[in-house]
Image 1: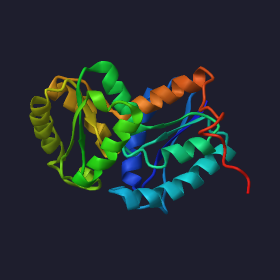
Image 2 (image 1 turned 90 degrees about the vertical axis):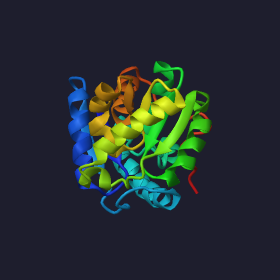
Image 3 (image 1 turned 120 degrees about the vertical axis):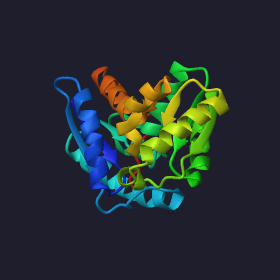
Length: 231
C-alpha cells in the first residue's frame, strides 16, 4: 500500500522530523511518503492560516489520487481541511487531532490536551464536540509556544514537561494529548517523565490509516463525503 503523511504547512524541517518518527512504524510492504506544502503558510496558527493551508492541501490530495495513494494522514492538530479531503480521496483520510482524541478516550476516563497558542483552543474545543469526544476531555491548554519555536527554542521540552505535570494535576486527567504535530518527537520522553499515556496523533493516525487500508476500508462516498459534483 502507498500512504502519505501531509504536513499542511511549508516547514521542511518539521516534515523531516515527522518522517523520522513515522517511517519506523510502517509495516513491511507499506510505502510511505511524508510531504509538506511549499506554497502554504509557514505554520498554521488560527483559522485564516488554516483556510490558506486547506487550499494547498486540496491540490496535494488531487496529486496523491493521481499517484495512486491509498490513504492519508493530515499532520495538523486542527485537522485542517479534513472534511474536504475526505470528499476528494478514494481511501481513508485521518486528521491527527481526531485520531489522538479518540485514542485518548480509549485509554483513559479523562484526558487533557496541550497545544501551542491560546488562539487554537476554541478550534480544538469545537473539533472535540464535533467528534463526540469532548465529554472525556478535561481541558485544552496552551503552552504559549509558537509552532516554529518548538524546533528553535531549547527550553520547549522543559516547558511542556512542567506544564504537563501541572495540568494533569489540575484537570485530574489520566492521559496527555500532544496538540501539535511539531511535538511528535517528544511524546515518548514525556510519557516516561509524566508516567501517563502521552499521545502523538501523527503516529496513531498513521497506524490506523495503515490498518484501515489493509482491511479494505475507506471513507463512505454514499452522502456526506461523496466526490464534488461536476459543474
